[in-house]
Image 1: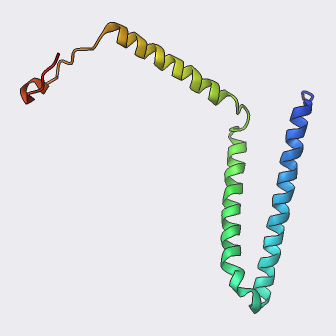
Image 2 (image 1 turned 30 degrees about the vertical axis):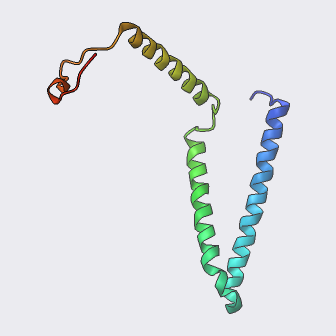
Image 3 (image 1 turned 45 degrees about the vertical axis):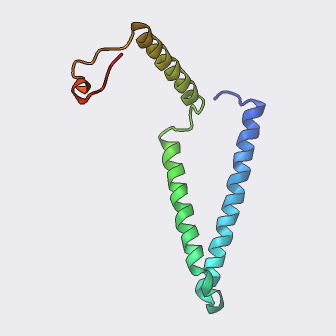
Length: 117
């Protein structure tokens, strides 16, 4: 395995910090859910806690699927691909403009009263 650069280590450390903070928040929500189930005075909080748990678990599943499919391997490539496609479309458009307007064989606007220059 290649040695990580300083920037990569900082990014991984920051991601780990965010993951730990999110896990602690989720643990707190589960603790609140446990209190809600055991005590009737916390029953008002059950729907938001369950909603939060469902949404958070859904996003976690999406994260796992994205990692398993390799969507985070090369996060820089899509922006370069978009720029390449834009250059390609600009070249094609310039080529079409240089050729002049294309005559449409099925143009039936002449009988609708439209006048072409």
